[in-house]
Each structure stands twice: as structure tokens, then as C-alpha cells.
Amino acid sequence: MHKTIEDTFLNDHFFVFQVRELVLDNCRSVEGKIEGLTAEFVNLEFLSLINVGLMSVSNLPKLGKLKKLELSDNRISGGLDVLAEKLPNLTHLNLSGNKLKDISTLEPLKKLDNLKSLDLFNCEVTNLNDYRESVFKLLPQLTYLDGYDLEDREASDSDGEADGDGVDDDDDEEGEEEEDEDGEEEDFDEEDEEEEDEEEVEGEEDDDEVSGEDEEEDFGQDGEVDEEDDDEDEDEDDAEAGKGEKRKRDPEDEDDDDDDEDDD
Image (cartoon, rainbow, N blue to C red; front, side, top):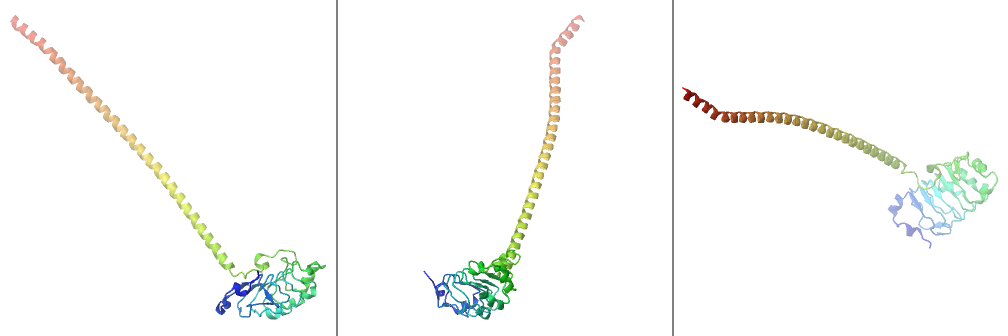
């Protein structure tokens, strides 16, 4: 089921002024026009009109700030001369899957001084002999044709792709820098935690050594105390033994004294 631009965007004039990217793929065109697509999109930089049934670009509105235009899978066979008039700042143009047959149909693109990238995949013109050399010769301002430069070096994402303006590149770089900073901070925190763990382990070892020394000292003191206690016990036993002997000798001593008195 086809849809119109009204199905995709609100009919708000203020909103139109703010739009920088507009994708209308598979919308319905009527007599080469997309209903609602007007010159009011003054700040538009990227426009995608893939498979909308265009046979000509003559009815495109004038968009002075447009840089990238997607026209893949339409039925355009010529009439490219209006592009330089209506889209003077175009840098990327994708005409893949159209009805372009001859190199001469591309000649009007010479007026697009800022054109850097041109895509013609699945167009009959690509089957011509010396196709690439001829196009680069015809359009000397081109850097990339079908995603590759004259030396067959592939275009980078920012140069070769026609999807967006690369406005968010700086934001992405800033985001990466913030992530790196966060990563460094996390590494730093992990190092601090490891150092704290090592200090705790060393502290525990020191406590164990101190407690061991205290136990040895206590043990030594207990040993000395025990020896002193043993000596005191022996002295008490000797004293008691002496007392016992004295008690046993007392009766004998008394008998001897009695005998002495009788002799007298």
C-alpha cells in the first residue's frame, strides 16, 4: 500500500523549517511530483526518494542546502540538467537502478561543482566499455564512482554513503572520549582497590605476627610462673616434712630426759 508525505510527516510549517533529513522511500509520486515535498524545506540536507516511480527530476523543488540525494530504483532516463539549477550544493547523488544508458546523459552533472560521489549500479551505462574511465574523465570533480575512486580504493563511510550529513560525527567522537575517560577512571579505581586489598592483607599479616609474639610472651611468662609455683610447693612440702619429724622425736626426747633424772 502506497503512502503520501502527509502519512509520514505532520503538516506543520514550523516543523518543515527544522527538517534536515527526509526519507520518503516508497511514497507515491503523481506526474513526477511527491505531494507535500516543496521548497519550504529550506534547511534540508539529505533527501531519499527510493522507488517512488519518478521518471524525471524536473519537478523536484529547489533545495539550496541539499547535499545528498537518493534516487535509486526509479525510471529516470535523462533530464539531469535541472539538478545543477535546483540542487547547486549537491555532493552525493545515487541513481542506481534507473534507465540511464549513455555516458552523454551524465554530461549535465558537470555543472555540479561540489559533486564528490556518484552511484550508477544496475544502470545500463555501466555495461559500456571503459565506463569508469569515461565517467571520471567527463566529471573531473568526482572522487568516487560506485563507491570506488579512480585507483579502485573504496570510499570511507563518511565519503561514500549517502545517508546523513555526518553532523553527529563530533558527538560520537566526544562520546568515545567520555567512554575512554570513564574507562580510565574505572581502571584507576580498580588499581586503588587492589592497593587497598594488598594493604589490608599486609595489615592482617602484621596483626598475626604481633598476636603470635604476644602468645609467646604470655607462654613464657606462664612458664616462669609455673616454675615459681612448683618451687613454693616443694618448700611447703619440706616444711611440713620437718614438722612431722620434730613431732616424732618429741616423745623420745622426753623419755631420755626422764632416764637422766632417774640416774641422778
